[in-house]
Image 1 (cartoon, rainbow, N blue to C red):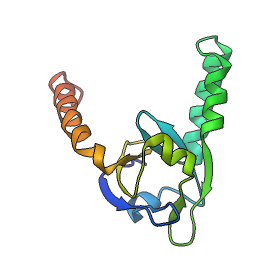
Image 2: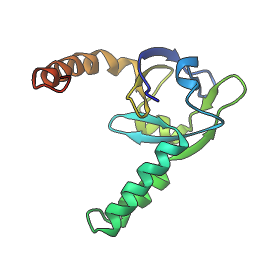
Image 3: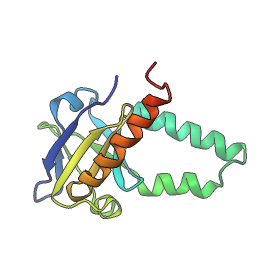
Image 4: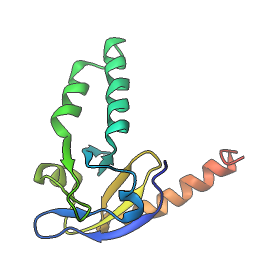
Length: 141
């Protein structure tokens, strides 16, 4: 399973986001939302659980303090997909990610990122350069 593609969408008046069918097919009933570097991440329950397990291991190994795990739990939200494939994005998470009405969904292989549409052009430019550099270093070979 890989989340790929870029999709421009609008949140409705209630703060709901319709997941495109190509992305929605990876979810059953639930998704986890959490802030990520300047965006909101949407993860499957399986991926979220695996991420939490990795963080817990790093806390046990002393690589991270317990505040990292506490922060992840406090700032994340488990939400149900409704019958129309919509997710209600909590106000707090929308504010943390700077999301307004217009958003861009971007597949990030293991999860989906939701970005403010106003931030997307600058991100796309730096992303293209980073991808070109990675391929020049042999990542795609």
